[in-house]
Amino acid sequence: MLTPLAALVLTYALTLGIAALAAAILWRPLRILLGEICGTEERSRFWTVWSTVMTVLAPMLIVSIGGMVTDAALLVRGTVSAALTGVLLALIGMGYAVWSRSPRQA
Image 1: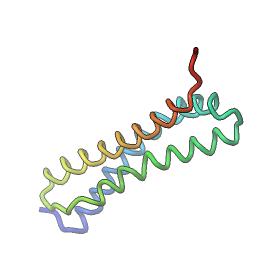
Image 2: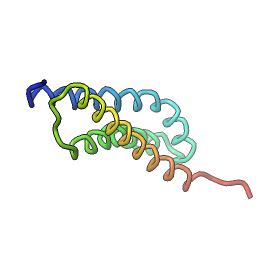
Image 3: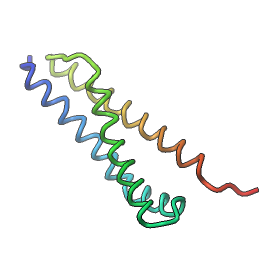
């Protein structure tokens, strides 16, 4: 059994680790892709940073919605599941935004 404070810290630490890993993996390819779509370095940099922040904040928000569990195994399982759901939702949103603005061949 974890104390409520320890459970909260573990929840946010796991979520931040998962989200930061996803953001770090996507940083370079996203910057290249957005550079092609946006046209200028300044726009590309802004949208890359914005997308990275959303990739981190979406999982944190999803995890914050859930209830607090003090059993360590259930906490880790629920946190990882919620964090991955948040990353997936952020990626779906970014994927749709990029897809809808990508030039298409006729």
